[in-house]
Structure formats: C-alpha cells, structure tokens
Image (cartoon, rainbow, N blue to C red; front, side, top):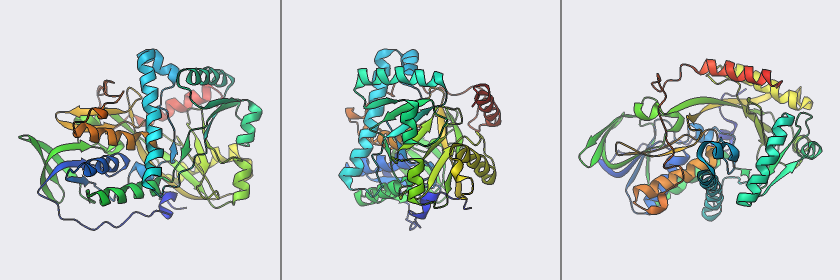
Length: 424
C-alpha cells in the first residue's frame, strides 16, 4: 500500500526549478494550493508582480489530497444557516456557495484546464429515517428559494444509484460533480506561470513584519518586501500567523483507493457514476476514480493524526460494510491531508493587521477555495467585485488555544460516541 495520494499517480508532484527570490513584489501569496494559485492568476493578469511562496512542492497540501468533489454547499445546511443568521443572510450565503460552483466549472471550461471535470451529480444518503425527513424539507426549501436542481430519492431510488442496503433515502444534487484534484491543481499552476506569476517552492516563510506601507517577509531562502500579502495556507497555517491559526482547527482527513477492480464492478456498485456522501458523523464520502476502475473513499478514520495503516484498516472496514462484494479487494493507496474548520462552520475571508487571508474550507474547499482566492485577489486590486457574503461573518479565535489542536483525540471519541448513540 502506498502512503501517498492516488491522485499523484496521474499528476506527480513537479520538480520545481529553484527561482531567485526577487527583492520585492507587488503581492506575496503564501501557499500554492487552489486558493493561492487562483489569486495569483487573477493578480498576474491584472498586471501585478506576483510571488507565490510555498514551503513544500506546490500542491503538496490539501489541494491534491482531497476527494475532488465539487458542490454548492457549506458545512451548514440552509435551515442551519437560517437559524444562525436569519433568512436574508442565509440566502446570500447559499448563493455565494452556488457562485463558487459555477466559478470553478466555468474556469475549467473557459481556460481549457485538464482537470477531468465530471458533471455527474452527487447523492447524499440518509442513514436514518429522521435524516430522510430533514432532507425532504431542505430540498423543498432549496428548490423554492433558489431553483436548485435537487430531487428527493426514495430508498429504492437510492439503491439504483448506489447498491448498498443502508440508506433510508436521499437527495441528488444534479449540478454537483467532481474533478481530478491533482490535475486541476497542476493546470492552475501552469496557468499562473503563463500569466507571469512566480512560484517559489520549498521556501518557508519564517516571519512577516510591517515595513512602512509594505511588509518585510523573511523566508528560509532570504528576505523580500511586498506591498500586499495574502495568507492562503488554510489547514497548514500553524507557525506562520498565530492570530490566524487560533481562528481555525486543522483536522486530518483520511482517504483510501482500492486496487483496480474494473469498470464493470464499479458500475455495479455505483451505476450512474455519482459522487456519494452520507449523513453519519463518520462523514464518509466516496466516488469512482475518474477512469472508473477504482473506488476512492474518505472519511473520519479519526479526528487526530493516526498511522496511515490504521486509517486504511478502519476505512476499509467501512467500505466492505457498504459493499460486501469488495471483501477481498486490496487497498492500493492511503493518505491524509489537513482541512481547516472554523467556529462559524463557514469560510473566512478578510484582512488582519493589513494582511489578507482566506481560510476555513470546512471540508468543502475544492470549489470554494479557488473562488475565494479569486475574490481575495479582487479585494487586493481594490475592485468592488471582491465583496462576498462571508466578509462580515466573524472568525473568532478559540479560547485557551494557540493553533496547535491538542484536543483532537477527544473530538474523535465524541464523534464515535455520537454515531454509536444514533445506531450508526
């Protein structure tokens, strides 16, 4: 079993030529994931001198480690948003999410990105009867208020989408889909280069300090000055900015890929090639690989770092429970990456002490983060189009927390207990 992302087989981490750091730049972007590269592309095309600083290879972090699913949503449901923020604000937040999905699909199409974009739709399976009833009300509200293309699935309908016995029903979001996350990242990287952005790989930022109307940036390879700075490190922010790190919790997400089992068996298990998610606290999500020969499954093997072999065993058990036909199938890859959760359960975009930031994908970053990187770039350019519905959502720091999540093992126990109590 390889302990690296399956996605890297088709889009390996590129050996980056070592560039000479410029003495200054108009904009320094810290983090060469989806957020940073999308921002770099927008800024470079606007004529700004852009330098992207990355402590590892570009895309080494969560951008090339995700499940690759794209959707309109946030961690909070529409009803949850209404309860927390009121109807008007909830509607603007949902529309922002819908805009992020449209943005990514349009970006891939308009730029001709080799990203294996799949407009498959996504099914959400209800694990309990109560979940199914809640889903029905949610779908009705989303159709009524946004015209969202979502349908309620009966138990027999769901079994025509995914051949497992466990779901009581579900929803299908027809506009959702998937990308190959590493190919998407590689294509964004190439576009940023073509636009004139410089990317300095293996260049760790050690400190940031105000310097008149600009910032002094000390890196592992030297010091430079930039007029504007965007921090786009998401779940990898600890050690860079304590003020921002205290506002997010980096959780590990674990994913496995099966060995090749052939398109026929994959189609038997997921007949229409949909993306599948479910309502359990284990937060399992799974999909066919882009070539249709494997199943890729992710979820909460734990909410704290554990050995990948242990994570693979736990996720494999979940996979075989869902699909007993895979009892003798080996796991070819298991990997992990960090997602960033916020107290609000919504992404954060803004400015702190003059430094721009975007963080808090909350597990839904493949569409949201490129979109918010673009919007952050528009803010830096002084464009009113940079405004988002997330701008006034507070991103408070957590008490008694320095950015290092010592309490995650306790979260693991709490979520397992909740699933056990629900009979999951």
